[in-house]
Structures are given as structure tokens and as C-alpha cells.
Image (cartoon, rainbow, N blue to C red; front, side, top):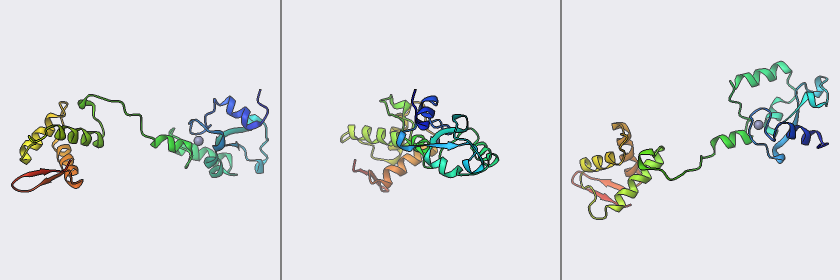
Amino acid sequence: MPTKPLDRLMFAQGSLCFFCRQPLPKAEASVEHLLASANGGSNNDENCVACCKSVNALLGSMSLKEKFQVVLNQKGQFKCPNGTGSIKAVAQPKLTPKAPAAAKSKEDQLALVVANLKQRGNSKPRTLKTLTSTIASLFPKGLSEAELIVLIQQLQSRGKVVISEKEITYAL
Ligand SMILES: [Zn+2]
């Protein structure tokens, strides 16, 4: 059985932060006294949890009531401030190759469109109308008018496509 309080608590919590439930690297971990030592809280495991340093610093020597308030305010989605929890939460999910219809993010959609236009070599759409229908056909599940417009705007703002009154030129 680990003997250091932090090691013991980490073990008991499955190496997750007590508050945000994210994997807690030991370098980020600290022991939080639920009832602060300053308020007479003991060093026993019953009064201590392992958690992200950031949330420990935030809770400091708040009263139990104030700590409850902090926790309850998170409405069950507790993220430690600047802790591993929040970093984990913004981390990109692993991208796996998917069928075009499954392209989810704007970025995926854009990449798909650019890749398709590249494949077309010299037979790229020459008018806005054909470009629009070409892009729409890449998304069999349907793309709203607004989404189509955003995609075309993105192509333009990135300089991939230059649309003038008479023709469209590409720089893919
Ligand atoms: Zn945490």
C-alpha cells in the first residue's frame, strides 16, 4: 500500500482528479483538504482528496460551504481551472478516415472540397453555379444553403478560389 498521502489518494481515486475526473499526472496533483487545515481540518484521508493543483489553489482555505458552491456552480461538468481537465476537454478527438458524408467540422468539409477540386484537374467548375452544385454533390447527406455559402466564402478567403464575374480561378 502506498504510504505517502498523495500516492494513497491517487491510488484510491484511480489516478483521476477528485473534482474534474480527468487523468491526473502526478506532477499536476496536490492534496486538497476538504475542510481546510486552517479551519481545523485533519490530515486524514477522510478529509483529503487528490486533485489538480489549479483547483486546489482556487479552493484555498474557503469554507466547506463555499467549496460546495464552487462545485455546484459547475453543474456536473467540473473543469479544473487551467488544470489537466480543461486541457483534456479542448483536445481534438482522434480523426479517423471517414466517408465524405461523415465529414463533420468545417475544416473537414473544406479539406474534402479542396481535395475534390484538385482531382478535377482542368475540368473544374467555371461558374459559381456549377461550383455550388459540385460542392453540394460532395455531401450526399445535404448541406444547407448557409453552409454552402460559408464553404465558398472560406475557399475565397483562403485564396483557394477567386471568383470574378466572368470566371472562377483556382489556386489549390
Ligand atoms: Zn482536476
